[in-house]
Image (cartoon, rainbow, N blue to C red; front, top):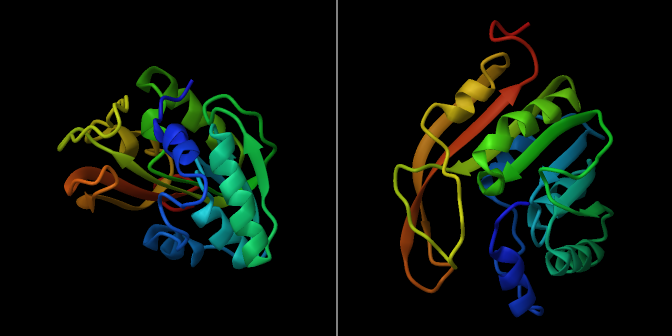
Length: 204
C-alpha cells in the first residue's frame, strides 16, 4: 500500500484544490515530447490538474490515485474543462492497467511506494510503454528532508532513479530544491526530475 497522507487532505478540503488547478511546469515540459493522440498514464494523479492538462492537449489519459476524494475533485475539474479522462481508484504499486502507453508520468508520487517494491514497479511500467515512449518522474530525495502531515516516504537515494533507467536513454536527470508551504509553513524539499525514452542508452 502506498503511504501518502494527501488522501486525508483531499477529504478535509472537498471544495478546494490543495494543489490548485493549473498544470505543473513539468507536465507542460513533458507534453511537448508527445505526438497527437498519445496515451498517457499518470500515477498518483491526486486532484487531477496534470491529467486534465494532458487531456486538454488531446492525449488519451488514464489517471490513478488511492484517494477517492482526490478522484472526485479530478472528475469535477475534467467536466469543467470539457475533457475526458479514465480515472482509476487504486494503489499505484498494484493496480492493473492496460498498455501500451506513450508516457508514464508521476509528480511527487512514487516515493511513497516502499523501496523494496519500486524496482519491480518501474520494470512493470517499462513493459507497458510503447517503443520510443517516455517516462517522466519527480521524486523526493533524502538530501533535504522536511516531513509534512506525518507522511512516510522512502526517499530516493542519489543514483537510484537514474540506475533504474540505465537501459533507457535518459534525456534529463536533475536534482534541485523546491519551495513549499502546503502545511502553512514555508519549507523546502529536495527532488530529482527524470525524463527518459524507451530504448538503449545509445539512443537506438
